[in-house]
Amino acid sequence: MKSPFTGGNARLEKRPMTMEYRQDFFDISYHYYVCEDTGQQFTNDEIDTLNQNQVLKKYQAKHGTANT
Image (cartoon, rainbow, N blue to C red; front, side):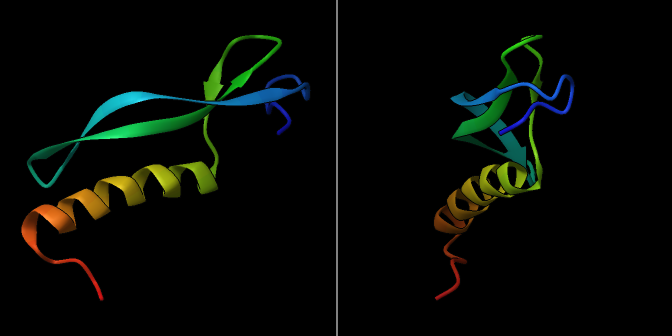
């Protein structure tokens, strides 16, 4: 991945994070990129979707609304 800040390299990282969805809180592995030149963190649409899907799946499992 290329950094949108410098055009240099960016590495994919993840960390534990608690996110809120519909007044519930869910622990996920939050994915993001880090610009190797500046240390700035960023995401793109693909990573945002990955993070959101983790929360949605946990919500569905908790409330029994998972799509089959």
